[in-house]
Image (tube, rainbow, N blue to C red; front, side, top):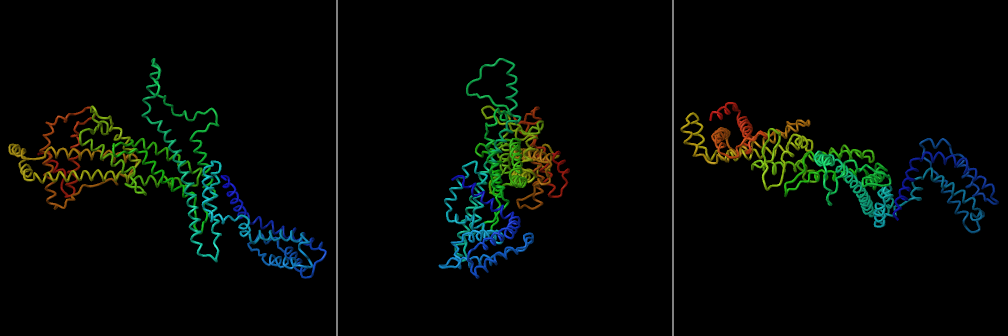
Length: 617
């Protein structure tokens, strides 16, 4: 029966109502016993044809006890105790139920009827919990877990019964009454059964509710996605084409709906998918909010926390899914588009506070904070890891091959168009707005992780440059000492090896540092903490300070004498539209300045002096 949940729910409500209004019940029934039951019982006694002395004494004591009840006692905190009266009633039943009794109870049904009513009223005063257990105890269902689970499944499949589904977790709170002092060995088994069923029911309710929330968020995401600027081109094109005659539309090309058409409805009885999701969520919210917490075998259970944990897990997965990252094809969504989707999700989750008693701010804060770390609470990759890997492995790697150029005029990286290759616009992922969106998505800690990885690659390039300097140590020493002797320098230059490699690696360093500066600027503009992204270059190869300082000086010499080679490179063509060169050699200046500043700062040397020496060479 799929409607059994409503019956269980109403029983739980009646029990809670009785417990909540216990003072009202006591005040009423004290007056009822003293002013009505006592009078009725006295009248019944007087109408008895035969009443032996011993039975008469007991019945008279009943009347006197009930008549003597103080009316004000119900307003005080004194406890009632009618156990002696009930014991006397048992004794009277024994006297009047034997054969040849002078006052046979069977011949005087009014006595039994009135006394049973009196006993019931006394239990409402001093044994309310025992009376509730006697009237509505469901603890025996503990021994039938499979039928209970089937009833719960049937309830979850019936939309109109979802609001009553919390009756099943509350039912598990009754199972503690199955424990008996004579069978202590049953306690662990009963406890495990009750907690297991309760956890299973609440997990399923939270799963369905969180699925509804995420589906509704996805609907809102789709609606917000229709408002993205990238859809303006088709709309403008259609508006212009209306002025000119156009051929009939081909089949298979459905016309795209305009944003807002989903709200147009002629009949309110027509329900959309979002309406169904809202209805299901509202029903489950009523169920999860029915009680803030309840107890199962000394364990306090909070239903709303189950939904909170499920929402955090699903929200985290949804954010990562919005990035649409593919490691095989190196495709990823633009940070600005992910930010729009994230805003849609956050807006809907924040509105849940009107339905469910959740701290939605805490949920959003926890999830977004996890996205600023390399791994989330489940050990899965986050937006920080995804975008760090993509910018390093896709964008900057293509920049090192010349497929992408730093465009100072655009304040972004631009793709060099090539025939036969799929179109990819690097500017759509690296301009000012995208850097701001990236900073908002991964925050200061995520930008610090990105910066640390960038500087690690810079450090590896500097290490390779030092190796090249060591390979040409003797020649570079002579070149440095012969800076004022052009003839000797011309004779020494052919002895250098890997000069192109030095320029290439320095260019890569400049590209990485330029991207890092753009990322830091985006973080500053959104009000982040740029001081968290400082990563100094320091020697880590185990060499002595004197040797490392010598290598740093010779590195500048190596770069200086290699610069003329750029004149013979056919890719060294200035692009006026991008305000840069097609082989990114305009990044060399930033690389030389920052690397020299870092290396000479470590050794407390004057940076300006060494840069003047570089210009002299």
